[in-house]
Length: 261
Image (cartoon, rainbow, N blue to C red; front, side, top):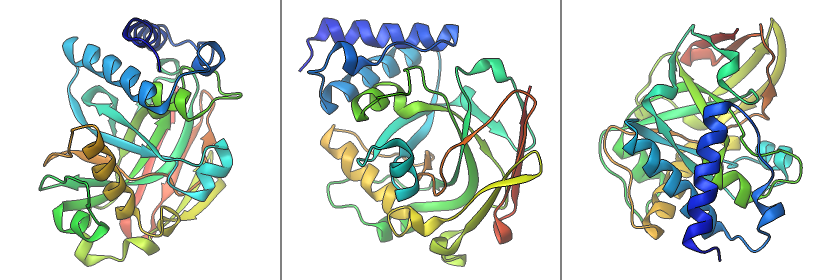
């Protein structure tokens, strides 16, 4: 495992990479001995530095919960990161392309909690009971670590490659819809690029939230009422270039659109 000085140094390096919109060498290329616990420690030091600088946490994201994403990345273990208030974009936003080191879009569902959730034995049914509503969301991926050859350690350290999210569509109480069958059609510049169905996330998207509650319990934390939880993508990431318009049709749950300039 890494010593505290190395963990702090990597967290500082990642914060500077975010500030300057650049990509650094893989952590595992320099520290092959780094473990998953080291990665969450790096993320934690980075997170605390951001909070100390005035950013406000609004929720957490879960990654790599679907076969589509695991096959796209070669990583089979889910991970999680944190989301700050300045990374949330409303439907129809024009997003500055230069804010990111690289831009990819994922299709997700966002759970907004009305009650706290804690492990170690949280189930997807408990997640549904604790949820105020579920709504469509697009996640903007933004890696600050070189993509080729990265491992779960690199991804977790880099806040699970989270860059931002766009919320839209029609919020629904989980009792009013079978979330497994929520589908999405993802377009870039009027061309359909990806399709998917929410059951691709661990058979039910609420299972991803339950996994997170149980994982956080191992780290002495829990999910709080009011948090927004991105449950994981059920499509492969779609690359976006400057000038692109993104549109996602969730059928009965409405649509989301954004553009990058």
